Figure 1 (cartoon, helix red, strand yellow):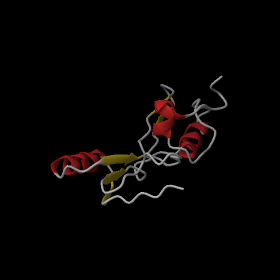
Figure 2: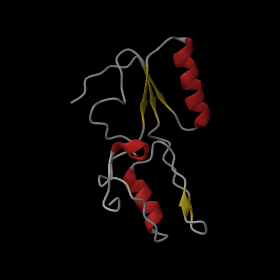
Figure 3: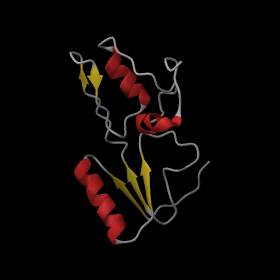
Figure 4: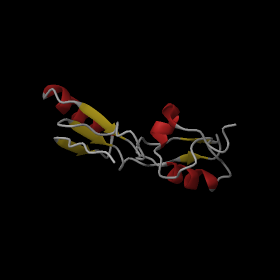
Amino acid sequence: MIDKRPKVIARCTDAADVMAAVNYARENQLLLAIRGGGHNGPGLDSCDGGLVIDLSQMHSVPVDPVSRTVRVEPGCPAADLDHATHAFGLAVPLGIVGSTGVAGLTLGGGTGYLAR
């Protein structure tokens, strides 16, 4: 559906990787695109001739059942978040498609069953 060809793809595993990729793009004057957890219909997670920062390997979901909070890395898909929180009787009101990235949903990219 999307036909874009980036010059470089940085598959980041932590914040240091992301910082290095951003600096590389800046130093080489490359167009920059971010791929989070996936499911980007318009293709905004890629670019022609630039650098794509792929965050899909950053999908940790630590849950604190005492404070009833969860932290989510930027490459996490909704299914991973649901799986991690469900074990503690928690739920997060966002999208309904498990392959959708949590970062995009957090930035206003969708609504879920619990949102209304």
